[in-house]
Image (cartoon, rainbow, N blue to C red; front, side, top):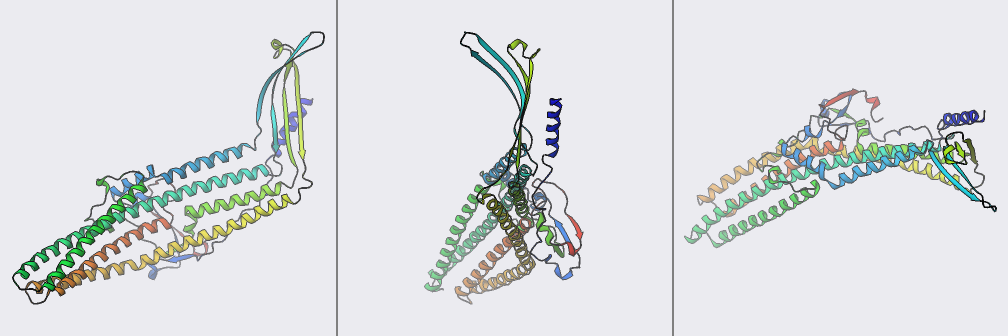
Amino acid sequence: MRRKQTLLSTSLALVLAGCASLAPDYERPAAPVPQQWSTPAGSSASATAVEWQLPDWREVFIDARLQQVIATALAHNRDLRVALLNIEQARAQYRIQDAAQWPTVNAAGGQSAARSASGTTSRNYSAEVGLSSWELDLFGRVRSLRDQALQSYLATAETQRSTRLSLIAEVASQWLNVAAYQQQLALARQTLQSQQRSLALTQLRHDEGMVSGVDLASMQASVETARADVASYDTTLAQARNALDLLVGAPIPEALLPAPEQPLADLVALAPLPARLDSSVLLQRPDVLAAEYELQAANANIGAARAAFFPSFSLTTSAGVGSSTLSDLFNGASRIWSFVPNITVPIFSAGALQAELDVATLSRDITVAEYEKAIQTAFSEVADALDERARIDARLDAQRALVVATARSHTLADARWREGVDSSLEALTAQRNLYSAEQGLISLALTEATNRVMLYKVLGGEATGEASGEPLTARTTTTGDAGR
């Protein structure tokens, strides 16, 4: 009869445990940003906003060499490796906290021996199975701590995805820098060769008395300036390659570097943006998701702090057999059991429990502000990238027109100088203008390609941390749902 009562009490405790939670109901704070952005196609915008999702990174970074470099970085980058290990650590911590809500069942066996004054030795053997100090979670303290550990684990996973996304963007940007520096170095070498030919012609004319020493000195100065530019870009390219190797975590073979003659615009593909982009896309950014998981963890921590005000119940129980002889331990031995419930009621803590609750509540309020700041930062980053995107085509058109005009001016000035109509000053000035315009075009093309990378990053990358390979999709929503 007593055994049945013990089993009934234990079963009732199992049912009651974890049934309550004193954590506040979680509500996602309203996003403190406008509902949508106006994209470069804003002139034809409709009243409907679009929730836009980027494809897998292999569909954005389409160059096969760049894809191999990114894949190598994902395999060897140490920061990403640390982020993955942090996930495993957080997962293990959650498993520890999750196990705390279940009883720990232990098996024990023992022997005792005693000798009396008469010289008689008595022995006793026992074998027991039972629970040890299992907390009955009637007010949800253990459950709240488990929820906090779970949300912290999920936040760590999103932090890893954010690290992965940043790594992909940084590797792509640095690889594009290498491509741009290669083009600038090639242009500097081409300019140096052209000026060396002009210097040889000027030297010949000076020897024949056709040009002054001033023209010869000006041409020599121009050649030395070009040589300095070649050395400078050569150094910059070497440093860019070193930075790329560091990001990737392994040396990059020459075959995986960009071709100097390939236009930067052909290396990164970005699907056209919708006319109106819903700001709710920010809620899928890994850093914003991490901030929200941290907020939910802080919310669960309030439940644990509230539960500390209520009585704590724990249970220790065991059942087994005992015998004075080892051979009879499991055959005809007497049965033994114990049932030890324990209750702890907080009476006086000098305000420590209230202070802990205040700390938990204030931590939640701080995390709310951090979550809102994360959304505001994300919105600002997207707005900056979209604003640059809206004007980059016009800037490129103007720069290309400038290159065409300065090239024509240089052709005419060089022809007049070779015919002896003008001095070398006009030809040198025209050549420097052309060189500057062409360098500016390379820099602007790098800005345009880097802007595509930045848009991929600030919009949150692909929906998951793994390559999905799914095509670009757009889901139509009403503007009233934006920012929620």
